[in-house]
Each structure stands twice: as C-alpha cells, then as structure tokens.
Amino acid sequence: MPFTTPFADRLNNVETSAIRELFKLLGKPGIISFAGGFPDSNMFDVDGIREAVNAALTDNPGATLQYGATEGHPPLREQLAQFMASKGARGVAANDLIVTTGSQQALDLLGKTLISPGDKVIVEGPTFLATIQCFRLYGAELITVPVDGEGAQTDRLEALIAEHKPKFVYLIPTFGNPSGALTSLARRQAILQMAVKHDTLIVEDDPYGDLYFGDAPPPSLLALADSVPGARERLVHCGSLSKVLSPGLRVGWMVAPAELLAKATMCKQFSDAHTSTFAQATAEQYLKAGRMPGTLARVRQVYAERARAMCQALRRELGDAIEFVEPQGGLFVWARLTGAGGKVSDGAVFAKKAIEQGVAFVPGAPFYATQPEHATLRLSFATAPIDKIEEGIARLGRAL
Ligand code: PMP
Image (cartoon, rainbow, N blue to C red; front, side, top):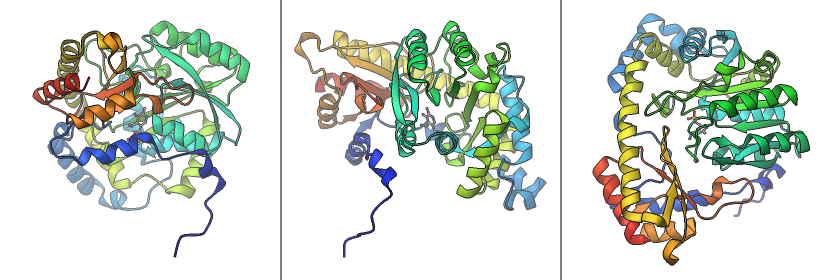
C-alpha cells in the first residue's frame, strides 16, 4: 500500500539537496573525500571528554541524568558566558543565552519564532545549505547579498535592507560555510551600524570563529556590539562546540535579546524540552577543566597545515583552471573554475568527473539561495591527512 496521507504544505518549499545525491556515491571504495563538513574525528580529545563524563557523573549525577531547564544547564550557561568573554564578548551574562541542541537548533528556533510565510530574510550568497532549507521550511523568501574576499558586501547589504525591510539578516562573518570568507573589521562595524540605523535584526552564526590559522580574526559582531549603542538589542549570536570539540555532543547556544530568547525557549520546550543534560554537564566539566585552549591550539595547527597543503596542491595541479582565496581559518577552500584553456567550468560536471577519478567534493551552486554560481565548488581539507590531500588533488588534476 502506498503512503497516501498528504504532507504539510510547508514541505513544498524545500527539496532534497543535490549534495545528498552526491553523498550516495561516496561509499565507493578508495574514494578520497573533500566533500564533508565534518571535523576530523581523529582530533577529538577523547581522554578529556572521558574525564568530563566521569566528573559529570561524580559531581552531580542526579542533575546529569535528570530532566533539566529548557534554557540550559545553569553551570554550562555560566561556562559559555565565560568562554565568550575570553573571546572579547564581555557583556554577555549566563541569562543572555540559552543552550541549544547544536547551533542548528538555534537556526530552527529563529525560523520558528520569527518567520511567517512570505517574510523576507537576507542571507549571504553562498551560505550554509541547511539554513537555506530551514528558513524556507518556515516560508521565508530569501534574498542574497554577495560575498567577496572581505565577506558580505556591506554597500549591497544596506541597499537590500532599505529596499526589502527583511525580518532579519543571517550572516556567517567568520570563515563562512561554504565560502571560508572572513568579514573585515570595517565591514563588521558597518553591519552593526546599519542594524541600528535601519532597526534590523542581524543573526551572526559563528561555529568556525575559533578555528583560525594565523592571527585571531577580528572580534565577533557580538564582541563589537557593546561599543555600538543599540546594537546588542538587534543582534543574535549562535555558537557551537561542534567544530572544536565534538558535533556528536550536540551542544550549541544562542545569545539574543530577552524577548526573543523567551519566545525561543517556549518553542524549544515544545520541541525537545531541553538539550541533553548528559551532554551539557559533560561540556560544562570540559570547559571547567580548562582544556579548551589546548584543544583549540591543537586543532588550529592541524587544520592550518592541511589547508596550506591543499592550497599548494591546487595551485600545482590545477593551475589557472581554478581560483580561490587561501582560507585563514575554518574547514573549507571555496574555489571557482575559470574555464581557462577550455577546461571544465561547471562545478557539478567537474564533481562527476572527479568521482570517476576517485575524489569527491561538493559543487557550489546549491549553496546559493538565489542566482547560483555554477563555476564554484567547496573542498574540505579537514578530514584527510596531508598525503591523502595531495593524492586527492592530483586526482582532481587528472579529472580536469
Ligand atoms: N552553522 C553553520 C554555518 C554550519 O556550518 C553548521 C554545521 N555544519 C551549523 C551551523 C550547525 O552546527 P551544529 O548544529 O553542529 O552546531
């Protein structure tokens, strides 16, 4: 018997992603994959997390295993406020944030609390695919602001805000997924000023800000907002332990104005009641033990080496057929096929050829909510060791 119950109308706004189709091919034996968005599981601080689990079960096992507050485990909220303060966001108190089940849930709660069908939301082009899908599920009409080597183009952004009066603007200012772009300090300040001037809510999604390779990036919008009167009231900041500690823990958080936080908490209550107390208590113990700075130093170094190796190999093997800005952090190289010498210039066509040669990456077009750029592609350098990166890029050269 076929399933005949009609699905909710909201599902008409989303489709299964082209990327998921590609992922089906990744099971081929011997494939070298630059396609995923995962951190390297070999980098997880297993000993540190084991100690944190033990501490969580020793210190207060009742709280660790019991239902908890929807807003989050209070000692973790304290630790997260301190973690953000250590990165310059000193004005954030534990009560200014809620813990979410990954930052993905924060994005969903924003959709749930703010988007009515037909509402306009500005996103970067390109942006995180799951955000596109999530906001569309709530009926958002997405408008794209282009991204260049300095992040979202703020002149265009201001014009789009004035024209469309969006419900909010969603940005990944630091090592965006997929663009890897780093928004400059001047543009960050311009974004905060336009938030106040146009009374527009800005959402800063920041899961990659800790993964920098050289100098620290400019402070987050959240850290800068304290020096721009009125900006904190118009800013949401989403953080996550996924890329630096463990995505399996599913611990993220959202800093937002009190009124929005209250509505998001209400929606979360009906959704998952609270983020796993076990995971939260583990994260709290981990942060409390002071292991994070050492872990960050370790992952930054490994990813920096892999990013450098990938960029060198791309220049060597693909030459002028590809252009990219060497990433200063994050997990991705975002590149554009130039078509030089009559070579392939469509990311999706190239991805198929690459799979035939035993190497995978993700074509860039699906990361655009509107006006896809078909020549783009995203390569993750995070999970493959350097010899595999070199071999994989050599295969890409052959595919070209
Ligand atoms: N935002 C961005 C930009 C991401 O790349 C990701 C993960 N790929 C997330 C949010 C969600 O991460 P998590 O739910 O694991 O915190």
